[in-house]
Image (tube, rainbow, N blue to C red):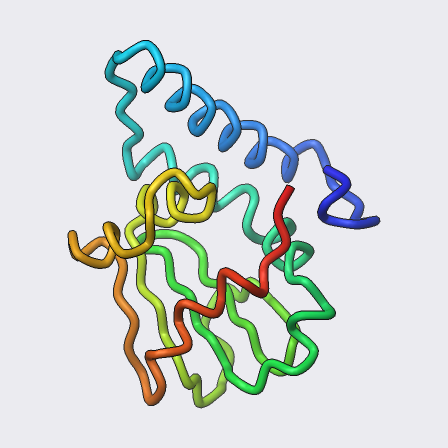
Length: 150
């Protein structure tokens, strides 16, 4: 996964991205064949629980994040959290003590499909599966710009 840089991955942490690729590209094939391919929140929580602790911290683009003057808290319902503070991403077990400017709460499957650009963010927000709050909720859309992708 060269887009994550020179980060050492264990077999356990590589499992998450492999599962996410299977879920998302399985959806692509199913959509092309006009077949159902349901992705449940339980499967997605497994993926994010395995991959977020390593990959999300590594995926933060250091150049774009360098000037970020906002503290984000991204919480996946029933899953991990991602904190972006002062241009650094961490996946804490508990929210670190910080006065977050923007808190994003997302259903696991909505987060996965928005992250892989398979569902537009407006659709996830309109359906109530993603929402932003906090002192400054308007920069929520900017978080996706700070994350590098393949």
